[in-house]
Length: 396
Image 1 (cartoon, rainbow, N blue to C red):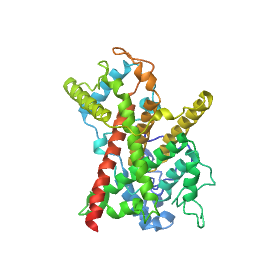
Image 2 (image 1 turned 45 degrees about the vertical axis):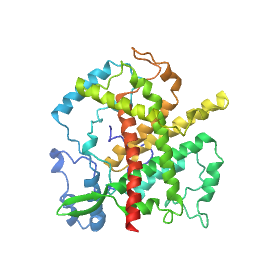
Image 3 (image 1 turned 45 degrees about the horizontal axis):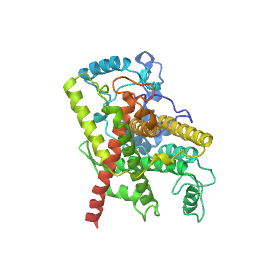
Image 4 (image 1 turned 90 degrees about the horizontal axis):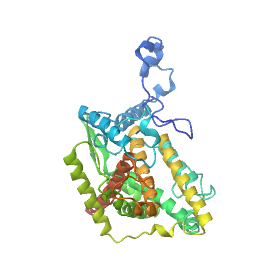
């Protein structure tokens, strides 16, 4: 992942801009040129930010919680070199921009679990606001419900938004529901892995029922919460559908999940094929064939618009001010993008040759990692919803 790409839409003014949390310090050779007043930090009374101790403490905590652990074992490093060599011999469908960038780095997702990082407020809202307001085919005159950044709407309780939504074609409704479902899933992960307390310097993480109710309870969200959760299930079904559709790609003997450990690779592929088998036994509730099915010219134009809107959303993820949030945001967005790519490549997947690579449809390693991890996060969301249901029942 490349976590250093600049935000292409606005100046980077994330939550930690006061302390420049994610900027490398000056090289030692330049240290002597830094004025003593700036080095003094809190004692520099002329620095406006230094007078706001609470803001600095919040920033420091968010920086600590949001930092990405970039530790890698020597064994992993050697494996990555081997992977790259193997990937070079494959016939890729497309080359992802970040993969060969000098700023791209390998990140161990097990060392960087998705959880609450302290990244909140206007910076986080600005990212989601940009996604909803500018990338969901939405006119500015129709306000999204419970958006704190939107101007006052008087008596409008958000129902006009849903009246407008129902008037859209299926594809545009689906687009909004996918983004809403992704937003709900990410919020759920934060509620599940929340910083409850910090005793003796050791943080304690766990489910936060109060935070869950604030984001999803019907009363506290004026009926919006259940809609968000419904969209989460919709997104889950879409990605489940994509997994069932891509099964033939992986079932071919030529496709191996290469890491260099033959025994482990065979076990991993067996496990993956068993997941595909499970998805096939599930009665699907979404038929993507009904999408982009109008007249050929109009359908092609709408499909391209759909693709560009989604591509723009993936670029907005580079505006997320917290590294850990950016990491998981990019991963889950890319996973959904890969699912959409699969759903609209059914004919190409069906024509794949058994024993040779095909230019008709190809998934890069990065796309496979994103697809499976994004589906893993959604599966976790569905499971954790049941846990919150039990916790809410117990708390009553």
